[in-house]
Length: 187
Image (cartoon, rainbow, N blue to C red):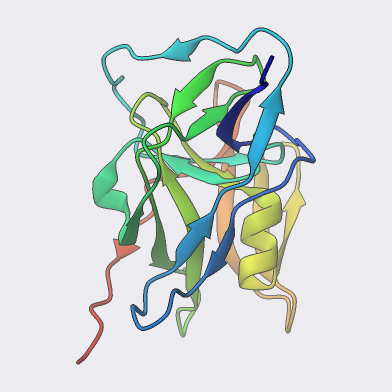
């Protein structure tokens, strides 16, 4: 019997292979090479319900492997994903990934520092925008400091506070509505 193979976006600290971004020849756009993973047990349930109302805050997730949003308007430099690309939550619930892209916002410092959310996944059925701590730190050369009711994102270079997050009543650290900036490429 042939095993069930499907594109796979791991989540919640999974150590499985991740898509890699490589520019395809002559397009100038990132391309994502997905790794097929063999599923030997019963596949997880896929959520195809109506998209949920999403918070505009960005939640800081130390277990996330990717940045995630339900709002396609949060994406720039959009790359379609294969139609059967699935992202798994920590509870093994599978959600379809529709698009992949990036987003940019500016720090609150003077002068502002551009900060990127690379490989931001559009998942219509997620109810929170998620910032992956490990990806954000790596992509922007920053580090996080967590305290009882707030957290700071600081530059690895000269250590100024670039962002401040707050602990919400739900017990999750979050950045209140980040103002995303969309940069058009000049020809």
